Length: 68
Image (tube, rainbow, N blue to C red; front, side):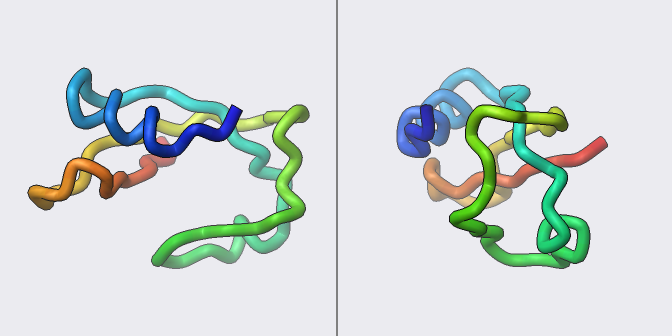
């Protein structure tokens, strides 16, 4: 769990990947932009799916998370 480098490489080489997140966090509900980080996120009780996509740059390790 939690290998961001492997996820970034997979998105860069394969394309968008669906992932699960713990979205029941007040800080996530008010998130607007930038890098979201909360050390209290639960890695076991995941409750929302999002799509991780490559960013629109030439940097293979930059990702966008889309919430549809």
